[in-house]
Figure (cartoon, rainbow, N blue to C red):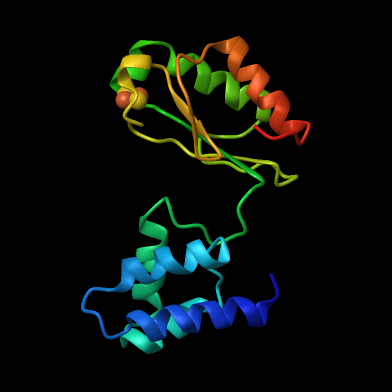
Length: 159
Ligand code: FES
């Protein structure tokens, strides 16, 4: 997306929400939804509109793991690390992901194909272990199923 279009999206969001008390989180969510991430150029625009310092805005962005400051990977895989999934093998699946992709639990592959994001309960505890891939829930995931999903992502098929 061109920089000027990103900036237009940022300004539209700010125009809509800047008068709303406590709007910073909503503004960040809306910018991320519109642009795909929060570009660095948005930070001074947000700070100016809300009369905050740059450090305050950056502090909020970095505090919440759901905010991205770089373009998203083509595929986002969120493995559940909460109790039910842990008791049904999520730890082994996490190790499989780390080894296969050579990433940590928050990493993005260098080719921009896959990002890993841990999540703590997807509401599918009865079907643990569970993960979400590009917004789609996959339950009762085992090593074979995880390999199949990764193969599709890495071969750039729909997951
Ligand atoms: S604990 Fe994993 S879906 Fe609830």
